[in-house]
Amino acid sequence: MPLEATLIVIDNSEYMRNGDYHPNRFQAQSDAVTTLFQTKVDSNPENTVGFMTMAAKGPEVLVTHTKDLGQILQAVHSTQDKIGGTADIPTAIAVAQLALKHRSNKNLRQRIVVFVGSPLDGQGADEKYMVRLAKKLKKNNVAVDFVAFGDGIEEGERSILKTFVDTVNSSDNSHYLAVPPGPHLLSDMILNSPLLAGDRGIPEEAMGDVPSGSTGGGGGFEFGVDPSLDPELAMALRMSMEEEQARQAAAAQAAGGSAQLSSSSAPAAAPAAAPAQPAAPAAAVAAPAEDEEDEEAMLERALALSQGQDVDMADHAGGEEESEEDAIKRAIEMSMKGHDQQQ
Picture (cartoon, helix red, strand yellow):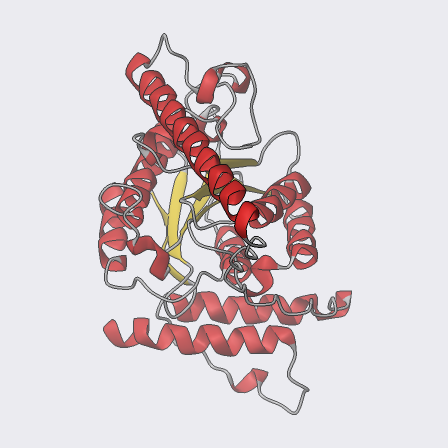
């Protein structure tokens, strides 16, 4: 069984209030976190799991390393009052990497599991920036799993997450799982996916393909579920797919009839413009190698602030020109003040 330290990063953005998962996205995600934790800890008595959020006022580490489910449940419960804002995926991953670096057992391999249930924003929508981050993680032997769920993520954004996983992947240690809305449980889909195949002692080849272009497994089972193991889930997924296909066919037929009618009387109206997406900021110039220590020091302070520790910022003050890392630092510091006050 894998010997790992895992950091679970959840999406607590405003999109988690959506009800396309019962009763809403946040609760479905919370149940999946519990499943992930229990499977990771049960697979090896030395494994540890941490927990953090990446939206609201900013990325926040709530649990670093634990084997106690109660700590995770308490952290998830406290997050219910911190839903809002947009998810900052790159900063959250960077802080998660630093938290894993400080794991007590250095023999544990490092893994970050990121839940994404909202549109990518800022540098998270910049494919070049994300690829650079993935290369850095691969260099430091950090595996990353993405779980994309809900219908708020566009296909182009899913492509960015897939590219990230393909870049960070080493010997099939990273996975991308896309779970569309439906009658299935998010926790069940994760449990029956390649993400937890090794923890359950099941070869990834036996897990089957997971839905919606997911990567990290094969075997040919429809929807990634072996009907002989879970016939009810397999049947529910098949019925959901058939209903969706029927709905799409009816919508296409209605659209075709409407277009034919309008073309016989007047020029067809231009299709409604899709909601404008905020332009992704231009990728910042990559910092030279000698600045890597400064970046790590910044993340050290961000992690300490996230955990409510006192941090002396005087040694970092100076007349240096503000860089991308400095801007991220200030944003994280401001976001953590609320957490410090609550403590």
